[in-house]
Length: 434
Image 1: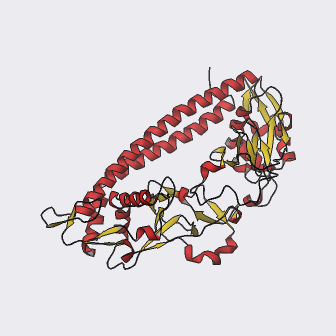
Image 2: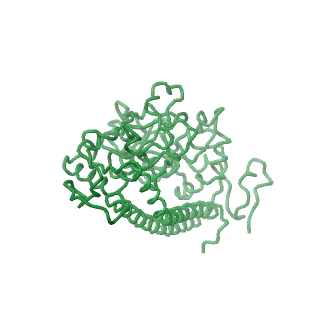
Image 3: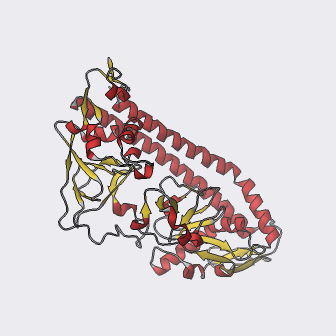
């Protein structure tokens, strides 16, 4: 049996749900709590529509980044496990979640605690469905997306479906079980993609260091990570042929709700393209300050720090203005008549360069690499016409691998879409669970 909400205009947007479920305003389910830190020493939490409530320190890209640019965390809001933390500026986009942690969060956020005999995790799933995000947008105050705010009085006025507690628990457990299956599938696909990438990069390494003609003369290598090179290839220091441009070290206080996107390490997708879905932004009025770090189509970008150091991508076609963050390196050939940009990209992604990067990181003991380190790294420089032939040959040879990677990545996207649909059906009572 299902009940319909269309008889009451105020709750018509809820659609159909089991007839024995209640409909209550959120003010009957949650209460706002506003306890403040007296020391600022608690664990700092962050809120995202991608990851919910997480530990801020786990999202830092490098040791150079700070948890916050605030002078003190005294006065930040206290959060307990089970609390609903809402970024009121982005509630319409699902930027909220149930905390698993004790900690503190921004004074600008709202913290709500469950009332009565209810499971907060159920409502954490419910409130991040497309249905509720649309309703949060409707109740938010502001003219444009970047100015929308979902204040507590508006949040509390919204109606919610409320299953019996036993059913809330069953639904939450069902979703968690399904999420585990989805996560295992995704991890399996990611491992498969990594194996394909290793195969691709190994092929690139063989061609770049061995050339296209097995009958040519070779010379013994005097540098690490390669035994020999074609005798007519030059082996030169990196800085003789390439300029490494660093970006700007943006701080938390630079970021706004909307504007010019900043490319950080997290925007460098391992598959070789820019993923701007989670990019921070700065105010558009500051464009003139940062014209010298604008990213152009085809730029070669690399992570210069952290656990993904050496990760590299090509900036694809994008009509937006994109700005380069400090720990993202931009590699520019000094003379295109001597070094082709496509060839440089392939060489930078190959084990020949990647192993040199890791070697220098181990030697210095620092999880960072910069201009000084790249002066010690060697490049292989074939004649320019041969570089162009190598680029075309590698493109043809790796086409099947690239298609397999694209297929696996699409399967990951589809399973994530399936997960979202599963959650929406489960929390609305539209999926048979037991």
